[in-house]
Length: 342
Image (cartoon, rainbow, N blue to C red; front, side, top):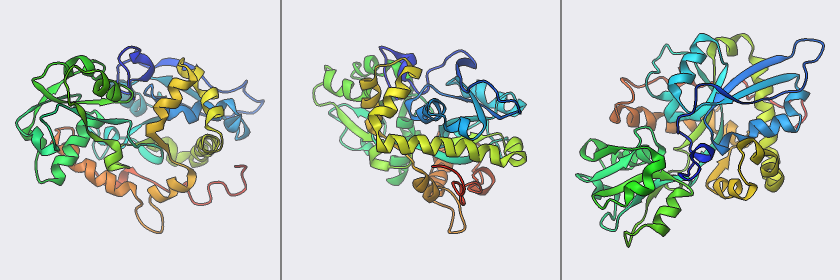
């Protein structure tokens, strides 16, 4: 989730041309019509299982064709989903929940794909010892950046508000240069830029104040699909999930092979991708079941959802809390692999 020197390759939120095709996945169509899914998502390594699932034939074995495009701008993606031009996207649960989403906006979360466990965070100057020290200080970040939401959440845990922090809006790709201004107490960023700032800044004593490792699960990427199509064609999306979680199984069994397959889709060296993924936890099928609602309860994602209802309102990214049951569905997960190869 990083890097200013090659921003298009690592920045999770950097704008890219609307719906520019990164690749069209899938072999030649069989004689009968295969199920099709068009998925558009940010340029982020966490979504690599989609490319690995195609390359390894997992989607083909399900008679599923998946086409993809990179686009980091929700202003492009959400209208495309509403119009039916695309079927799915993948991004953080906080982004999924933020404006312009309302209770009536199409989109159902059907799964998780990765959790940031240190890849996102906040670098602070030596005078900032705790998050409470940011009150009244200049904090630089993007409004919807994971680092910014981490600060809002951490302050709320202390009974404080980000409204009392002087939030300076910047492009994350500029965070290294911005932090050189000693009037900036802290900056929201991501790896490997986060470590590069700490190790390369002229500000002696700079350190990582907060990272997603401090609040594991808060920065979770989810799979969001067009509600109308999901309700009409649930098995198509079950196929999609099976492909993704088989790819995650491959990562857990042989991460070097996974990265070797995935890195060319992002046009980056394999070692660079491997380093970035050190701060990421892919959610296996078993972990997915623990996150999503089931007969046993709402799942671990409910706690994150509730936190973002508060965070998004505090950052003026939402007008009112959203309903978890209306946005998140675990219906596909019961016996997802029953009778299917894994």
